Image (tube, rainbow, N blue to C red; front, top):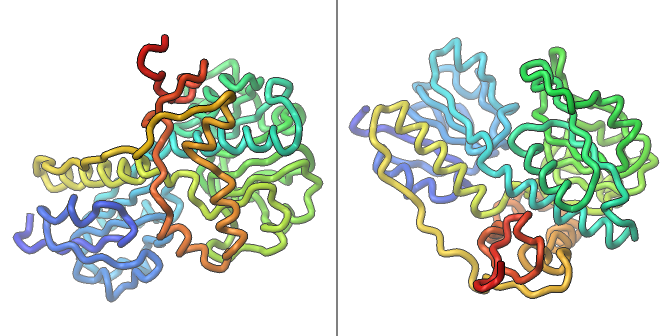
Length: 353
């Protein structure tokens, strides 16, 4: 390991300075401002999804290891990294629970504002990986009938319960998307399908659905956390969305810190050093939640309406809303006496079964 290793990192990765300072000199840069000049003399490069990592960025640099503190890797040209012999790591699964809790919050709000019972509906989960599998589990706890679609897993694992995308489009009242963005190959997800009915929830990548066609799609409701062309979004699509948020479904504090921990440990493995840093988290100030129903309890832990209102007030400040996102703790930090809430991660109040 070079004595004066230079580490260029996205300034919005939490605790990145504290985590990596023992490994070298950490230079913080906004993710959208990563340029060839910025990374040219870096040894390690730490990014998020807003930074395209490819030949245009790295040719002529001395970067030997790249890590992204995100689940998705569609912003990274991994084939190029392989050809250059540059090590790579992602934070797969780091914020899966955060996204799943976002979907729970969205489903509870939709059932309230649209006046339907979740137990009367069928949910189609497209993409049953780290996130989708958690969403499916929570959805069943909400009483929904769940259909699951994941062609790569189906081929690998021969899961008899999985169904085709066509079956989901025909039978599901609500479809939630949890797929990577891929533009080629048998499992390409770019503009995956054209929604024509029901309710759509997209927390994966904006370009999984054609956003211009979404504007006129005859839907009962639409929940969008991701947008084609971020940070620039279509005002007409914002108006159409029932719930609209600025790509923060995975932005629980726990999820973001998990991402930092994962890329730090990966960097240590790459460098052959023993990890020595762990974050110290304090948890929420008021961990006991009251409420007669799950929606009331969830709103106290995470009120999705606040994120919707923030985006509608100032959608042109998409990146700022993400950079200045307030701390959001996952449900397991909270306790409640509400029966059944433990199925969603809430802890029972002491003395309750």
